[in-house]
Length: 389
Image 1 (cartoon, helix red, strand yellow):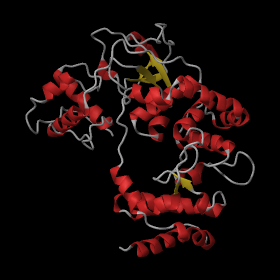
Image 2 (tube, rainbow, N blue to C red):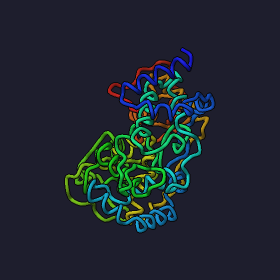
Image 3 (cartoon, one colour):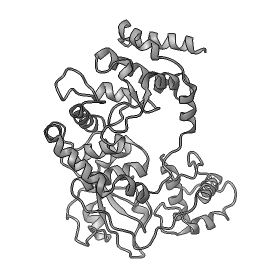
Image 4 (tube, rainbow, N blue to C red):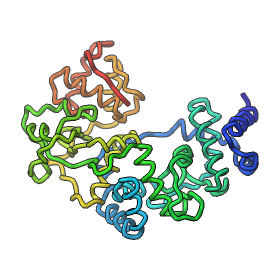
């Protein structure tokens, strides 16, 4: 299908969805194809840094203090958002800082050409047709003009980088000017982000999200229980030897939590509560979501995380790729073989660690790689092993 034919069909769909002819006419000069956007989409890389490296850069003392200053600057909007939506100021401020440095890094590309180009590209057409129509609805509602719609290359908008569908659904007018302006109004950004976290990501009012802990170094610790898909009450984690970082006991209650080891058993350790699901839903990169949750705890007053007793051993990029290739050969679906340990790769690593009797902490090691190099081709995946990207 030619782009002109595609665009005519898209405009018909937009009109059927309630977009006015006025809005379509205003947007038309921006509904143009940009091959450069498609090239960027196909060549994008996911997070390749390890957690401590990314957190050191993005969740530093300075980042926490800057966010605390923003909360003081906009205290009325933050307090209102917490009262209405139950989302703490620290949680909102962490996303705000990470996504755009509080509005300083919004991107400089017009949104509509990005969206319509990605909609025309066959890879994710249906998704971006919906996002393009949502952007047109934002224009129709009077929140932004087509020329004001400037952001990242992938079409996210505003200071907390909402996709247009999220913008249209969850943006609120918190400053009372009659517009939902997430590019320029700090109050609108704060209220809208809280609304999205509470309503879209199902935040649980009054509950924690992430908490640093220390894990017993006992050799019999059940490392296979360290998994976001496994929840145990805090009393159980206490029995297993999990404490606060200073050694004090966890609360003796049944609040369920998962043990999160973003860099395996020798790296930082956290209890992830039900609200941590909001972070993985916001961004499914474990590195990003853990950093965002950790930064929010720092903003809320938590001390810096413990330094590992020794540097965490990390496989180089080429060996990570080799390990992924060996896991695929053994029958696992690890997603893209790219040298980046996403959730599918981590789940496969855990299954093979269990098979070989190694500590099953999902962290790729030289020992596991050495064992895997001897795995026969097409060896069956261990029974019950599952993977979620």
